[in-house]
Length: 368
Ligand code: NAD
Image 1: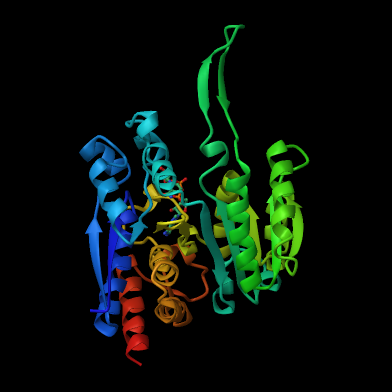
Image 2 (image 1 turned 180 degrees about the vertical axis):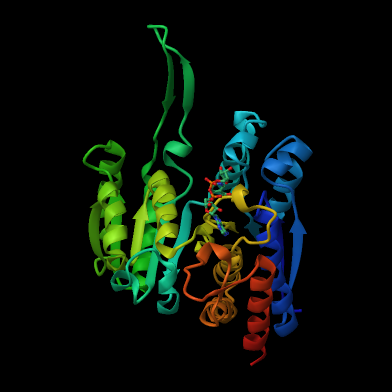
């Protein structure tokens, strides 16, 4: 066997195991058609791991993740009410996701926002805005800023309870993600939208200074500066103006969920979290406790995360393209999971059946 890869599989919570089950099938199909072997090692992670192992990111999971070629992570977390049963520090983001990102310094988060013209009817935007589809790459800084800064709670001199959270970036953190964004822009339309808040935040003023320095190495790229609040509006009114967008951590968290709204469902949002030595792949969305256990979650985001892994970690570009094509063909054939229902005669299918159809098409594409 010329290529053998070991992958840590973290199914996560709520819909995580349901959509992970479909994504894992992709590896079987690949092995049947290509000279490649995948060893999948399932590990506890998230809220379920807290209840079974006392930690959201147990030591045994860390050991496996340290050792593998790549990590495939399902969404984690519980409903607001259920989360209260877990100490604040161990709840899914603080106890599992942020430590995972910090451990592997996965600073560049690739969030493709893609809607083919055939899928445009899934978007809530008017047809004149999205009829040609959407193809945006949102790059979010993932290991700095407010989410990773020092946190403090206490009572001040006036006897009032207070909270303080620090937004901190050093120039290396900013430069490394901007370099990735410029490189992506060079491979695409040479257009980069820089999303910031320099009219208020010093962190954005500094971000933009570093951006000017990095831009000097990529003079062919046109940079368009946009304040984050204006960007939120522009994404609704004229999303096709965007090609590559880059932004700091919290802005990216919020705007990428807005992007899920443009597509019609967060279920269409896969992602890749890339560090210098290790990458992990996950849907951009959460664990959707409101639909868990019903076999109706959209597995596109999870299967798409596998496609991103094959391309970005293993260089299997043609195979990744085949996965995207297989998923598109299911939509083109008139099927979707219920999150994308648009009342236009689309036949709604379960998570499993959507997976069956994708695997059948993928099988066909890889055999040809
Ligand atoms: P969510 O992203 O889980 O869900 C928002 C809405 O999108 C819901 O209506 C949900 O049903 C729908 N949705 C999301 N993914 C879907 C899919 N694949 N198919 C169909 N519909 C889908 O956001 P939330 O409800 O605010 O958060 C739920 C939990 O997830 C919380 O505990 C939160 O902390 C956690 N979370 C985890 C991650 C992660 O694992 N990276 C990211 C965001 C939120």
